[in-house]
Image (cartoon, rainbow, N blue to C red; front, side, top):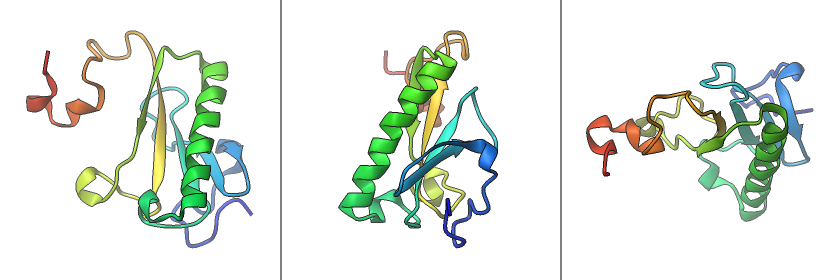
Length: 127
């Protein structure tokens, strides 16, 4: 079993799996914004990752660290965005908390300064 049936990510195509341990699983995003864009989820299904107990939350962040290393080796990116959309207002569309690990490459956007601040374009620029 990779994910419980109540997960909106179930069933999961096994060819998309990047990493798995007893508590977490990581797989390529179905709609990637960059090569290697991966989602890391707990096998404990909660709407928000912040509803996880301490053990599962720690395991999830350890999985993020391992996935980042795997993606660095495979894709050789120049940086990463690590992100969580927590709640519908924040853009969460799947009710199973997850963390995006997004490899970034020089030239993938004209000016990457500000990173996630560009959610609010009128407030992004602070330099």
